[in-house]
Image (cartoon, rainbow over all chains, first blue to last red; front, side):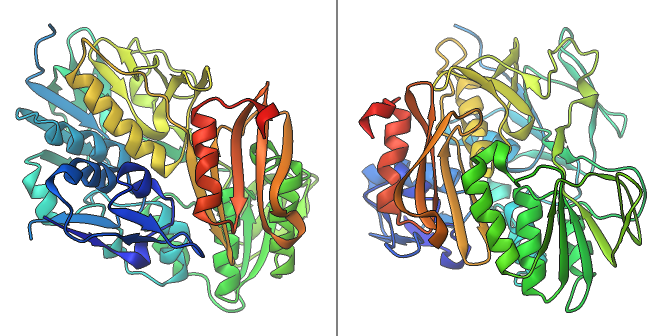
Length: 65
Length: 388
């Protein structure tokens, strides 16, 4: 599975970092999210799905790679 | 064990309703889900309406909350462009405006809110994509725009309209905009940003009526305008529930599990529930809460014998000019504010809010996520004020 982040949509809420801290982080200056990995491990997928669901900008997608 | 519901009805196809339907599928629910939406569009996002859409930076198709393929994968009985008109909680039946009568085993109410209006014709409101596009088409360089209400929505619209070169007159009944929500000091700081950006901010003025040519103040004065936007709050969409037996009190009243009646749940802007983290009843019109509560409701619905209290730390953000305002917690009713980072005057700060003897919330402008995140944890952990 592959994660996609639509950066211009990100509103820097940090909800993804709370849901999946080993997959997402936020830039220091403006808080915009970035990916720590584009291909999360199976054990990380639940957290990524949670991040997709809670992201208030609908900026994250999980795709079959 | 409660039997698994065979037919789930979700009324409201915006962020909360979609989150509920999606989470039901994610948790393995395989039976029928009907999702009813009042607007004729697939679920779309609202925060960008007063930001990128109004600014003309995005086309409306970027508002889609999920791709068409993803929605198709959810296998929903999607009914758009129709509203629910009645509920019978005894017979477990919902009636729609198109005349259909739908039975359910479990019901999720996520009908949101509608903008409050003022007497008179010709003024804009800003809630739907249609509202945002209609307003965007009317404002440009030199447009004289009166905005009634300097809450977050009015303030965001003011900032965008200034960016488009409009002349903006912002009318607010309170002496300090947003004081009830974020406190007087912080409200002053945000208000000053508007003044510095050329907004004609007039506080302590009440608007009694609107017209195509302007807004009428208490006392009779008419503030002339090319366009008028009314942004004076919103009311929960509960009219269809009057007489249903549900308790309605500025929202659908729920317990801490978001249960309104047996088999009936509410989520999002329309829900008033007891948040055990703050031990208070609240109704929250924030985008993040809509998704979180929709998810919580789906999980409780499927685990009716072992539900979990919905005890979130509320979060909201607002973009105005170059300021990003972010807040965690429940700021309403706070008793004290302390600036714990930065400087109010520089519009770069983090303020902590005390209610009772605990940290109830924080609000930051232009602070790094690493600074604000531990505060969220402190609020979730009911950290004492003396510890800051």
